[in-house]
Amino acid sequence: MRFLRGVAALVVVLDAVLLALTEVAWLSLRVGTVPLPVSALVALVTTPLLVRAADAVLPGTRLALVPVAVWLVVVLVTGLWSPAGPGMFPPDWRGILLVAAGLLPGAWVAARPVRPTPDPAVSAEPAAPPR
Image 1 (cartoon, rainbow, N blue to C red):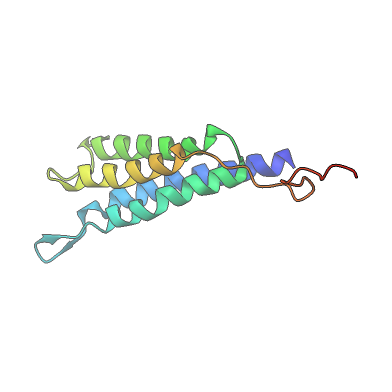
Image 2: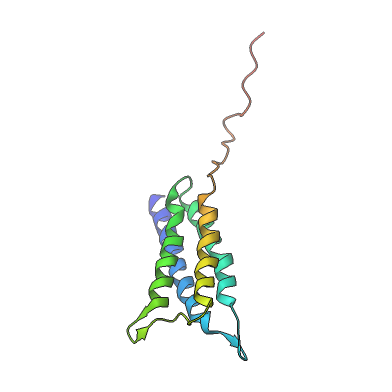
């Protein structure tokens, strides 16, 4: 069981890496001369889902922050640096929008209090006193 949870956690982190690379690649999308921030919309939806998936794999831990941290590192590294010189961030507002749209919702979902699932074997109501 532990092995499967580890594999599932690794898949969630790999998904964070692939999403970050895809979203940075989509930063240069344009319709004519108008920039199209599709990558920010995708990040806005997917980073909270990554946190929920990590929390489902390892419930009750703060390891739900790992996919958001990995996503942020990959976005910043690929966006700011590349072997050919400057990274893939365009020199305008789209890079900042991507980082904010991915980081803020993911961190907000991860910072919410974790509610343990109720155990059906344990009753929430105290037992009635004997008569």
